[in-house]
Image (cartoon, rainbow, N blue to C red; front, side, top):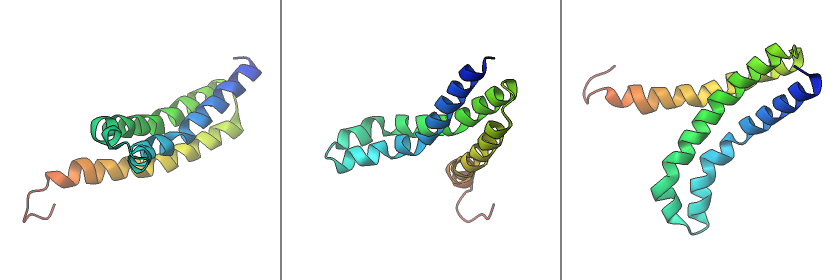
Length: 107
């Protein structure tokens, strides 16, 4: 892979990962601006896009950094993956596993 091309891809993937919080809060921002339909009708799409962005951008970045032999970028994408894993695990625990516990039982 050409050095300039790898650097451009790494930069694009870094910016893509940084856009995840904006995607997550877009429905709330639209609601505050007086557009409640956005939050009601397509709010889940923005949440799903934020979750996919938080998971896919560091993964693709690790692959590009490994192929392009960029050690500094590899470390950056490892940190991104660690930071992204916190909300993803939070979502999985409280959104998927915890609600399945019936009332009165301590799972």
